[in-house]
Amino acid sequence: MAWWYYQTKNLKLNDSQKKAAVTELLGHAQRQEVVVPQGDQSYSNQYYSISYPKAATEYHQDPTYSPPPSQLSYFAFQEMSPRLFFTVSVMSRPGQSLTDITGVSFRQKQPSLYNQSLITEDGVSGLVFTRDKPVSDDNPDLEKTAFFVKDDRVYTFSLTGSDIDEINKMFDSVINSLKFN
Image 1: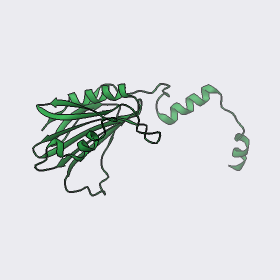
Image 2: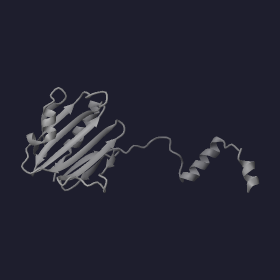
Image 3: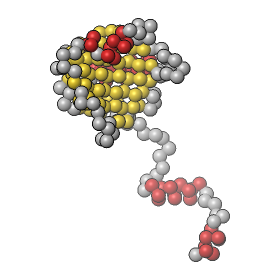
Image 4: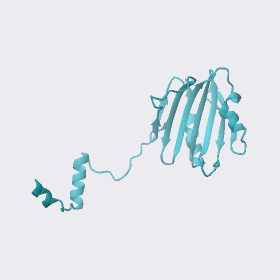
């Protein structure tokens, strides 16, 4: 065995031998291109349903994390190219209106950073805030966030990334698919 090792350790494989070895290890021919799933997939829970890109990576809360009792739902996904991160949270907030939401008042107090607009999806009115310029060099992300209140629940849909055109495109696509359950 030692003799065989020393005799073969300096052998070099040519390209066709390397290709054959990789094919044998993988069980199929090596693919040179990256296959990116096309189209959308759906996410649904007892509070809402949305469609988002199949190419995105889903994130769910760590099962060991103990969320606050008011948190009813959390879902997030990320797309790598372009880099976009989308989060959705549903909180129990009996008696709250849109203007009572901390995230809304925070953004309303910063009109130089956030543009505010009205939105209606699936018959529910809400507010959208767009930050189309970086806060600082330490926080270069841009953002688009919508807030809705329905049945004593606050729904927050937030998308961050570095390209406002891509943010708007993704945000509009996901929000236009929104159905409240």
